[in-house]
Image (tube, rainbow, N blue to C red):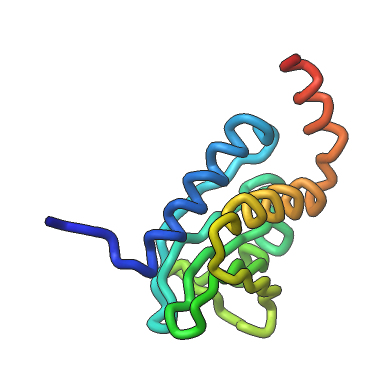
Amino acid sequence: MIILHKSLKRSEELVRSIRRKFEYDGKAISGVMECFNNKDYQGYILKIMHSFNKGNDLVIWFYESLKDKNIQVAYSTLSNVDEFNNWIDKEQLNVKVYPIVKEIKRDIVSDVFNNIINYYGLDEQIEEEKSLKI
């Protein structure tokens, strides 16, 4: 049997849920999800391609710290990503740490979605899209 390494399991569940959230509620946002492994952590990276400006476009890493038993979500810009999807300068990261508890996935998905929408100032556009669905 081939299985996912446990450090990727929660990260994969998160990115799958985030992707579904954006497919339904955030169609104004474009991006790509890829893997990363920087020797300390491994997980997924979400590269938002909204303005196509490396210094402005948002990048989010999702990974589980097995040592600390938590999920970490790190925010930066595309200019802080190397060719292997790792961050270049850790000082440019804004990291939020979530404890591993049963319902944390919903909180993380909501936080990430709201942070992206707020970062790009798309609150009104998202609300308008939601109202058109009703």
